[in-house]
Image: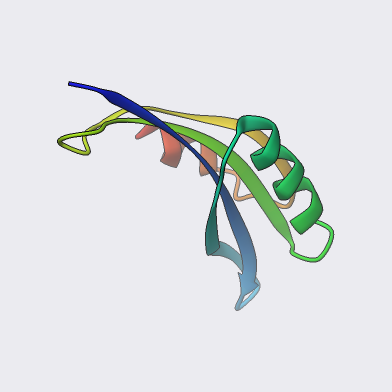
Length: 84
C-alpha cells in the first residue's frame, strides 16, 4: 500500500453573489502550489493550495491539508476539506 501526495490549487469564483469552487489545478510541489495559488488569486476572487495524501492503489484519502488561502475563500471551506 503506497501513499501518494498530490498538491492542488482550488480556485473560487462568485456565482449569484456567493463563492463557489471553480477550477482545480495540480502542482508538482508544495511551494509550486502556494506560488500558483497566490498568483491566480490576483485575478480570481480567491484560491487555496492543498496537500492531498491518498492510497495509490485504492484512492482512499489519508489526509487533506490547506497549505494556504488567498483572497476570498468560503468560511466553511476548512470544515468541508476536513470532512467536518
